[in-house]
Length: 460
Ligand SMILES: Cc1cc2nc3c(=O)[nH]c(=O)nc-3n(C[C@H](O)[C@H](O)[C@H](O)COP(=O)(O)OP(=O)(O)OC[C@H]3O[C@@H](n4cnc5c(N)ncnc54)[C@H](O)[C@@H]3O)c2cc1C
Image (cartoon, rainbow, N blue to C red):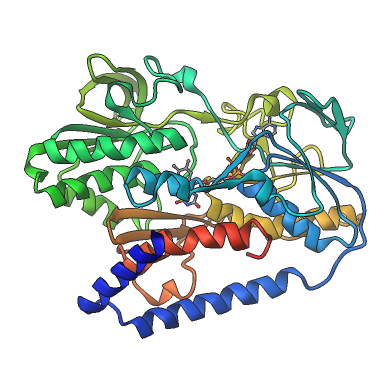
């Protein structure tokens, strides 16, 4: 299905004079060469360092890290603990919600993703004893380690929104693509809204969350569906963000804000979703208002909707805090994110623990694109520690977020800890401060095979 669709799109672009097939293949060849170059670098030499490595979490970070360690070590002893049967390519949830991917386009069996030679304990970690180098599991007792990789992702904290639960996703037309089933429910609801018109309420959340772009993508795709249906004069859309601005990467923000203005979607900042009344179809927000003299007050907003897309507040899984692995002070403490050195990715207290992925308490965007750049750093530093050396390789905070602005266009935001753009070649040949069709091709057709075939296998 995807291949045919891809062909159709390429033909349309050729016809419209956007790109010739030859140009497209040239770009792909350059990108492929870069992948290959990166791959070679990763396997220059194997280390004879030894030790039992336990990886908590077999998601994007855990599986890719296991694959890399397997290649980096001459005699690897790696155990992954993870309870899941399915491995999801979560960036694809947005495309299910937008009707571009089918429900089964985004997952593979977890057993097929596990690197060969790595032991998989299909279980849940309940506690880590970092001073005794062991983890407790729900059904397999305690497992000892010499080195640990902490990569259990995030927990969705449903208790922080009144009126809706994981089980009732979709009730009262309140949707979230931050769940596989939720993404599937979103697409028909979005289409119906685009056909009929009405009030659309869209929001993110006030905690750090995965892929800050995803809630924006859903709002923009909804608008684009209304454009296709010819109903933009019958829709009234509103975006509520928990942050102080719609987006905070200077290279990309002006164009994104302009798009919301062009489409008449007002943006309210500093808004916390407190509750959804799914029967009355009302969303309740607390908006923090800061006066010029520095005093703060809270304005209550009640937003009536016909179609709503929301995010659940996110935090580290409970065992992280209960094991004493979380930040205890600073902005990352409240939600229990792992106390991680933002450059070396080594735990701040326990030098035999590496933290990466969404659970790591570092000031970057929680994306698999960020993990891709964390992996070589985490691998090199863990191997160095195993060899008795110091962790010397540094992560610059790189993250990427392909913000789908319409069907066929993506604003590809790539940046570092300083919120400075870090545009990957060959995209840097284009003006990436504006949405580009080539980034759409990458998002829809390129990134998923890169994820399953290269990243999870430790090749990218
Ligand atoms: C809707 C949506 C859109 C996104 N869009 C993009 C995008 O466009 N680009 C991008 O780069 N990223 C995107 N992301 C983010 C990306 O998917 C995540 O950053 C990435 O999957 C995080 O990887 P991880 O390994 O840290 O966590 P996960 O991939 O979530 O894996 C965590 C694993 O840990 C396991 N686990 C949890 N608790 C325990 C426990 N107690 N014991 C054992 N195992 C445990 C889980 O079962 C899971 O397998 C998106 C995410 C979502 C939800």
